[in-house]
Length: 450
Image (cartoon, rainbow, N blue to C red; front, side):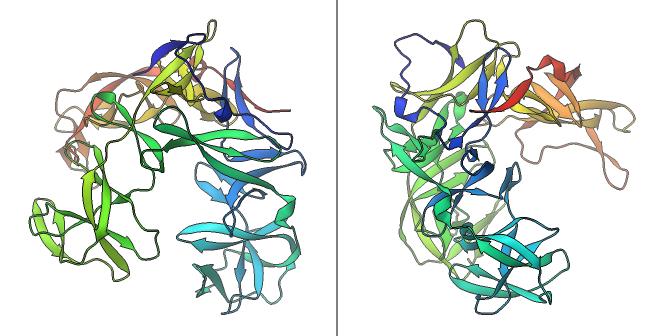
């Protein structure tokens, strides 16, 4: 639930050092709305006014983060044209791309995450083309990997020194409450709020729903528990790859409630392992390169409320997080017409403040699968939180209606008509109403700070 705050009220305390702003070099991008509301377009993508190009905050070897050009950052992650090695000692290298590009980036995988190390201009097509390639992974030259023909390989030109890139530093800010903030800053004055920091557990954390729509900030570096050390599967045991950092927190997800619980990780253990398969608890083994830990007491997590700051004359209101006497900067927008949160999204260049949409699908209301009905399936676990009342099928958006009490049927791949049974046990179908046109939602324009 989101409730309103009055912008001038004494209960609204925003930490000034967490306020988001552009610097003289790194400029932020925003989605601007006609009523004066605006929404940050990205927390990692900037416009570099010195180099006159877009850049993305990326980790480099050595531990620093630099705003790096040539990186495409979107919903699918970060992508860039990278270098590969052509010798087994990882000394000779070329650039790999499906088509000609202006630059190549060299990286190394460290604990499964890419860290950049060099940035080169592209040269001419390499002759001869390599038949095998290698990569650096955790300091080891891995390979060889066969060339598939998906890439053309290029010689590397001049290197761009990382000293010419803008460095970005992450800081944990203390507040008067347990829950603090993480902010990214650069020497030119850029500052951007990027998330939460739990000073009680000394870790970054992310928001999750709990029972009765309560919101907690859960550790973002917790590991999933898959094993047990007793034949009844009552004593959870954490198994982590040796290449991963030493674990501090573990997590378990309940299929009965759709809730996730968090625990403190204890000491190393050596014992037989068991794994749950349905109702059975069976002996199991972990991969040889993993180490096991005991799972200790459950964590008490900080609770946070989402509220919107009531600004007169605006349809879209800023949503803030409130914990104790501390309030975060804006974490999104609330649409007072639809009554739900929204964020900039849409089709092609038509960007609007859209609510979260659930997938709509065709089902059948009869056992012979003759009568179709458009429905959406909502999770009803006690930790699933509130829904935003809208569903989508291809390019059509619908208002979610009443729950379906009768049995629904689906067609199998071999054309049988079978009743639908939720695999999780905590979902329910709802009817969807007539289509809602996209013009119903506020349009946005992408702008860059001057």
